[in-house]
Amino acid sequence: MRNDYEERFYRSYCKDTNFHLEVEYKETDLYISCDRYIEKELVRKIVKEYYWQIEEYIKKKPLFLRSLSPLQFDEEAPLIVQDMLRASSLAGVGPFSSVAGAISYHVGKRLLKFCNELIIENGGDIFLKINEDKRIGLYLGEEVWYNTVVLKVRRREYPFGICSSSSVIGHSLNFGKAELVTVISKSTIVADSFATGFSNRIRKENDVKTVIREAKKIPLIEGIVVAFGGKIAIWGDVEICS
Image 1 (cartoon, rainbow, N blue to C red):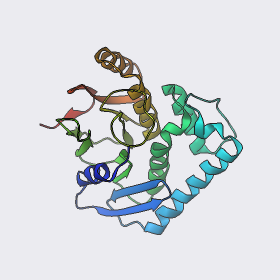
Image 2 (tube, helix red, strand yellow):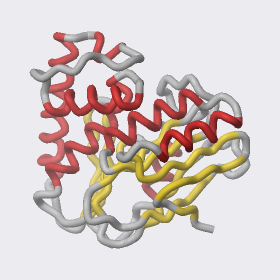
Image 3 (tube, rainbow, N blue to C red):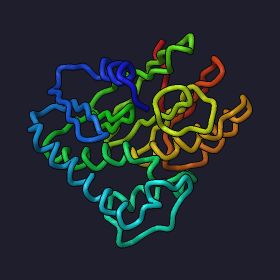
């Protein structure tokens, strides 16, 4: 999910007293909030490292970039690629659908060596390790009358991810009709894959119930928010702020 307004909206809800920095590299645009100072060039170096791993793998396996369905697991692939292959297999989507979540996740895990609290937002997909409850803003697009939704997200003892997919915002390929599907998971990569998979399947109101019912059965999913046809459905360890 990408456009300038949306990214500014997400980031306006991450403002606090922590240290902030933004790092851009190719298609990646990271906004980072943390409780310790981190060198911008260190972050850029880590991002470039994971980009190189993904790009080199694509040279060997071009289908990794193009496939809209899961691919066979590759034990010899870099760890970030393996994680994308696993998550896409669980969600029934192409592996590259989780690239934003994968970059956020692996960069976040590395940066947690230098800080205790960390938020990384990458095109609307968010990696979090927070020590207190936070408010996270979701942007649904100008065409929706309730174009903003604010979630209260509970602190956890472990890192987790909040990822979204939309049929009306951004340039990502989407086969559904939901204004927004947001998934919360311990893994940002899993959250990204399932947000895409669930969003692709929602084309009518009954599909929302089906997706929520499925999400409840998946242990890796901790919460889901679906905006469709002017209504919002919510399940799990998350609440909407009034």
